[in-house]
Image (cartoon, rainbow over all chains, first blue to last red; front, side):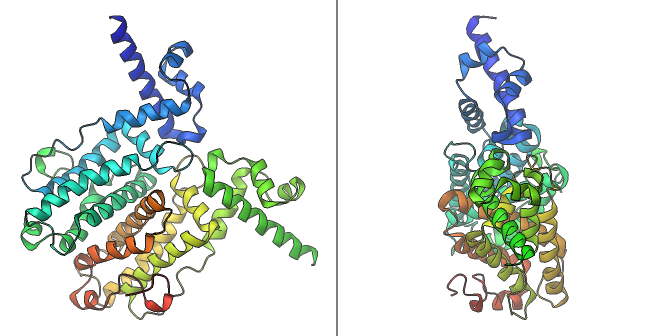
Length: 211
Length: 211
């Protein structure tokens, strides 16, 4: 391996190890020694990449926002793409420790001194965009403001995944989201959009078994 | 003051001081020294009441579940009482540090070794009860399971208050909740219940200015 490739690989291992520790313990209780041991790299290599626990946490958060979570749905319906995005985020939460750690670092406000709203802002933009398209395409009830609906979706998603985490380690997260969409769609979708919408996500995503 | 009264007052001051520290820093970053200093009581008095940080945290959580948050609404409609309960919880979050600290101790899973689901269970029961009455009274759409709707309400409330906290220190929490109820009511309430429901809460609660 060339030296640069090795440095990239070391950085990746460090971020994964750090994400595991942050996900399990939260920021405040995570120790830099445990992060170093978990990732299996030397102290020297760690400090070559990151000067502090805070920098490592920023690295984990940054790696998360690079994830292309909003690209997999092939639905032509923006409302369906918004539904699909929640299931994709749920899938990431269940399978990607970098993503889980980022969520925990975000929701545990005040312990980690990053700008707490970065991840929320990113989600609000992603859902706001799809819901604006949904309004323009006649799928969102016209009396609603897309950004208000996006705020409800992001807030609800955040809390529903937490409840699912506490109750059963997120095993039923897709089902909880599907039920939530069934409940909220009649109030936000136009009649035609409601008729077409699949609360369990587009089947081609293969995330929930579909219906 | 009799000795027992003094002990009760000391315990109360300790729990308030601890709640302030837990609310600001989270469980892991809160130190027992800071809790003692913040509450202004002696180390001896503190250890008379609580042997450890974990015991103090349990005391804060226990004080929260004694709050009579579900008693103030005088609405005859169970659906309206469920709406009112979310606004009362929002009001507690904005004004009661014991309550805020309990929420933070609950949502920061894993750092504090209590049974993380206690507070959620309590809320799920409270909302499940009102929504079961709503179904029996013809206010909840009959194809829905009251417990499923309660799970969505509790999950959504949890996340929406977090988003409001990060964005503006919960200043707009009542407005966010009112918008969320406007969006979800058409999908869960019967036509008659929807017509009567006040998403901003019963005016006699005086929590949101009403509409």
